[in-house]
Length: 114
Image (cartoon, rainbow, N blue to C red):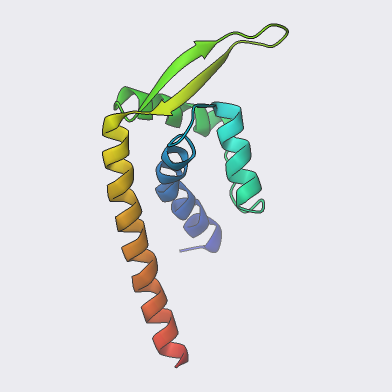
């Protein structure tokens, strides 16, 4: 598998976890979520608009996040997303799964360097 394809698959597989994490404690709009992912990853993770917003819509359709439109004076209307109760359960499971995966990879890669 080419490195670029592998990187895309990793990004795709972790996107849901990242989004759910960023709306866990407070509502955020889509642009803010995508910018936080980019900033906190040091630019390693970037999502293009064509794939990012449909991902938000799918999470909302699945009941993991809830969106609401907010209008503020002098600003364009934005859709803010927050984590639902179902989303909290899924996030908890995804975090545990991701941690198990990362630990397993670490054990394998460190064993070869020991």
